[in-house]
Length: 385
Image 1: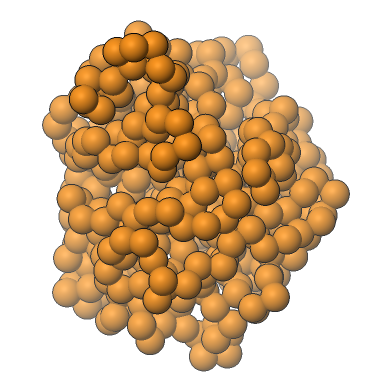
Image 2: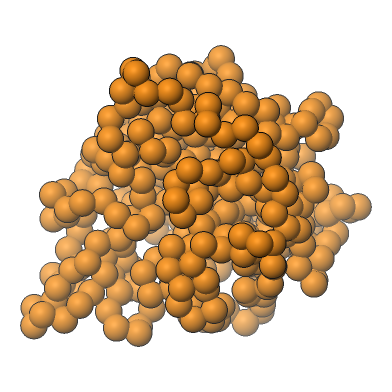
């Protein structure tokens, strides 16, 4: 019955993309790059909560006020706990921090890995995969370790929290294996008797398919899943379908980053899903992401090399261009849908080499005229405006 009320993405092709996915017009050659108008980087606030969690990864700008979530604030997920540094442990962060535009920060949730309402193989280590669905349902990825090293990394899950920061359910298995980044789109639906329901499509990258067994060697088994959810009333979203729409992405373990694999994802107006292929420094495009029933493999190579240097976070800007941030040099790069790299700015120069390992998630501000990003060196949220 749920499947009839919230059908698979096949029935939604004609609907307008909204809420958490960008819906830009096609890029025009006479339009200046989006990044050309952004000239200043300003720190907003520390992302370190009371328990000392560090390494902010996921970044999401809240679009509605509901419960303890406030419109215009930014939700940030922390990947590591206070043991990194000095011990260098990774994949053990448990907190979500909410930061207002004026810099006021508060802990939205501290997740107890020993008190979860469902399975999450390995526990909790929050990743860049972070989104908020209608009704204030927060979905965040977990790629956990027990000793802070890739040798103990396990499949993890997607954790679903309510608008007050309580974990209400988990999604595990059926292809979820090291959920690393995510974007989402939601549609209003009507049930058989006119009742309101929401259908959401999550697009999730996974980086642990054979990666640990590879022992640092490249393994071409990274995936992108489309997970269909149905929400009715006050009940948590129900998972009704999972489809692998991308596969064969390179991934590997890494002593400095735990794991490297397909990261940022962003949905274009025509239903193309753009993916940041971090290992090979390129952007790929999976066509018909909302409607396809099989894997597109790596899809079309949009752009490779050049200013792309380990792209991580990805977002589609107004005008349709693709913004990515580099793991290798602290730069943000703007690439057209046709693959032309039209702008590059260094937004972080800390670390050795400058900017390396500093950037992960990024998100447009509510007005889509500035970009929030996290600084992993200083553990801060910053704004490019």
